Image 1: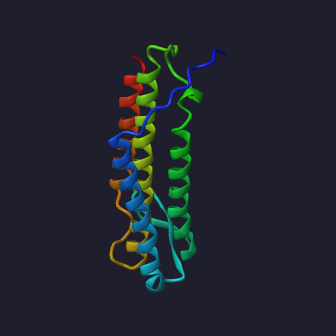
Image 2: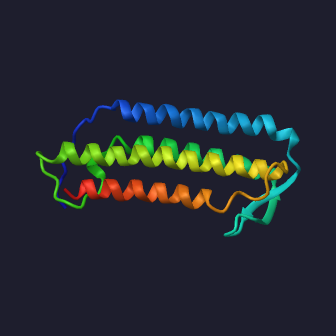
Length: 163
């Protein structure tokens, strides 16, 4: 295995924007849960079928798992950004193409980080709305649409990285 060049890729404005928005979403998730906590019943829907209807129930404490997991993903992907020379690439990395490849792989991580934080926040919000009786289920199309956006992000950057 060849050793890839180690470069310091400065954080871009796009990454700062993604991080800022992700942090706002994470804060909203925790604050919203704390604000709504006393209104929630002890048992809530924690699983939904393909139609978006509840089919599994559990403790409302489950709702803390979603923002905590989103926070761990945010931290993990933020740390991973620092080692693009450790990633696997679809093309051989040279001193000439390393900046382009590293920058695009870092952009991919940044978009994925924002997408995943937003998806987890939406799921938490939707489960709370369902538990409070404001809505019924989490909506059949919202999660698949979010996953298509995530997949489109990955495909877009994979195509760029193949160059």
